[in-house]
Length: 100
Image 1 (spheres, one colour):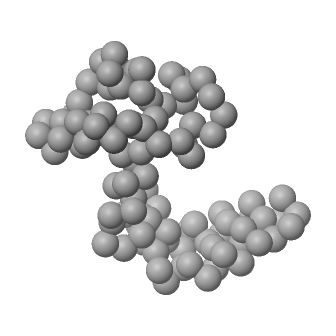
Image 2 (image 1 turned 180 degrees about the vertical axis):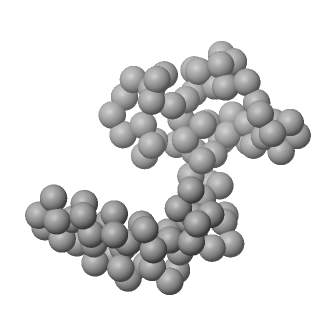
């Protein structure tokens, strides 16, 4: 995504829904679609859209319900260095699969 995206906010923009659905279908069918195909290179946002959809559909969020308040407190810290230290501390509390 970052290699082929040429605009700011690439993860905030949505891809064309038909391309995103096509990519989802390929992942479900063969587990490893060819992301270098023109259709995906021309609409790199469909790749990030599918990644975001996957994370939204997880039964337990990647950053877990149990640690939500700690993450919220960490990102609210004004000083950047202190904020990053706190975020790293909370990340270390994630269950191993989530941390990986």
